[in-house]
Image (cartoon, rainbow, N blue to C red; front, side, top):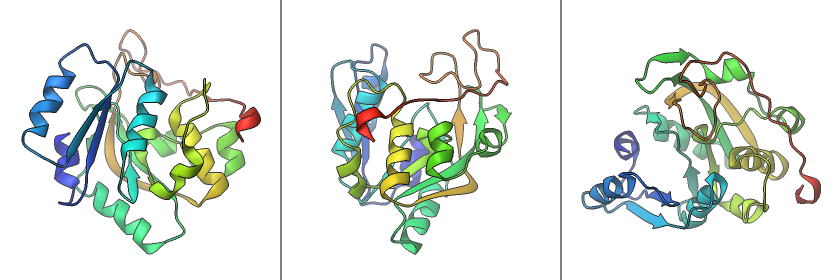
Length: 215
């Protein structure tokens, strides 16, 4: 949260959606709200990762939606660089940047997520093996008309859906520029790079899915 707030302009907003945390998350968020009125906090019943993101995206009012998860660390130039790409290309609907993958203590696991994952744009490439990362993407709010509501019982994560819908209805740009540190730890929704016992995994994971009537 600290690194996000340092990136934000006065007119920006930080939307936080919580779907039933049982730890100290809510108290921490409320302590931040007392200090910064740009933070807007919403709570829903426990519904899972995708539903929680759907709620957060639905609440966003800005022109550009920048996602964050996994206790990431934003580099100081992340939002500035993001704004620049969207400003320079009015047809651009989704931007994905690169990141350094780190462990819970910010020790490097992988220097480049994109190089590791062979990330690149292309509907067919990402349909067969998605290379989108939720914490690495930003998209125009005008795309919400295609994205929301999420299909019920999606067999994949929200980032695959957002990425592929933008590939179909918009313009996607992959930028090999590191703008954040992606923290991987035991207990995260995605297990990529980290095993259940805390050891680092070097195996690549392939996401395969069918859109059926939603495509």
